[in-house]
Length: 176
Image 1 (cartoon, one colour):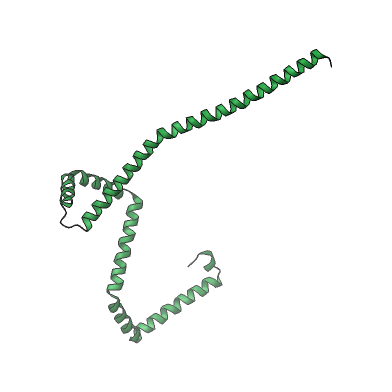
Image 2 (spheres, rainbow, N blue to C red):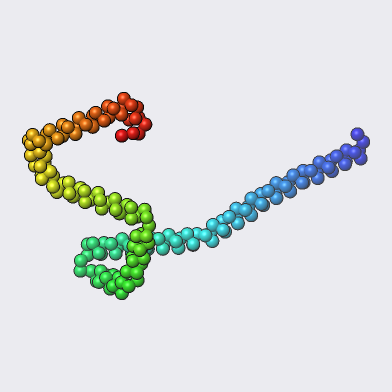
């Protein structure tokens, strides 16, 4: 290798080292810009989040206080104000409640559930309210020889029918 080639290689090495330093500096600068930008963006969102937190806390505090006033503080002036506000909005509240009921009553699922609940409550009321009457009648019927004979005949008939169905393989196929 002659001096000219050596000089070119040294210059090339110096250029590569310079480029490597520039790349490293560029990387550090890019990381710093990204970090600064992220910090600025987060700082901009902080007031929005802070305002939302303050609004949520205020709403929760008011709701808690209103509930406490309505439940605990019987002679509170705020209770009178709340009642006054509710009364002044009675038409709007009634309209909203009426719309909700109208919507619910038009839903088949709601009506089916409502009917099921009413039937359940009525049957429980009839059964439990009249349990002593039912027990008394059952005791009297158990002592009646005619009733006993009819029950035995009915049981015998059911057993015979089921036995025949099993024998004819109808019982397993969903027959009587």
